[in-house]
Length: 308
Image (cartoon, rainbow, N blue to C red; front, side):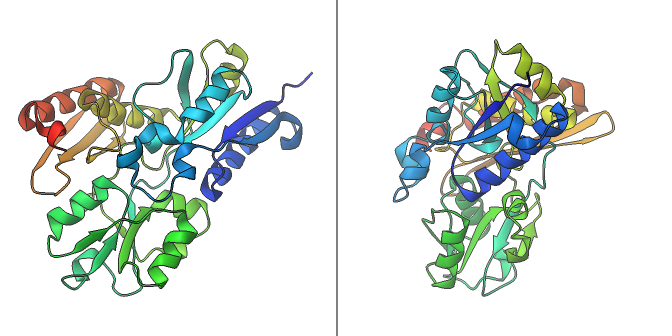
């Protein structure tokens, strides 16, 4: 009898788009109708419920994963679908993410009804974001702008823009594209101008370590290059013990068998920035990430993240 996979996910529009894409791929790999082999299970997380405070004030990345991982560990669901940029570097015992879908465009998207780019915003303009990484990079490039808190789903943020709560904001190109909202993007921001979040644009599928049947199926869905890039970026993050409280950015890219990894850490005010790059064999992804992390950790000093 064909196994039916219960797929755990957050309930946002983007999360459901991503979960349904995973369901479609599981059905293809199983050679069976999607409704026969998958079931979407929506799980409310604290990060979704608390909308009036910045993530850095209420606990960081685990806010979007804890309840989902509890149900996965208890076998109330069979797999969980995550935006990898939301994932803490350490997973609970007994759980693993060894399947990643091919990464979408990792860049940030600039959205504004008033101007075409961050550089074109008049002095004193308000940029809305809930991301410390984006806020710090904006402050570093444009200290004459005001950064204001900006949480909520995509529709909420677009509405706030229209209401003039902010003159511009940033969202992930990948998320907007997956939701069919690429036409809302004013401009895609090059990594040279704003380095993305670790693992931005990547979807991961989490499972129980002991679930060999799920492991066999998910290997059919895994994109090797994405796995290597995400491994390098998350290895960098792990060395720094980074979370939503810390402005950290990284982007790994592969050409042939070679990998280029760009990394950055900043103070929240954008006043202090440390950057480094690594190039090497893609097969050495984790070592490249760890080495970059150790360099920046050493350069920044022991109190850098405490001050953050």
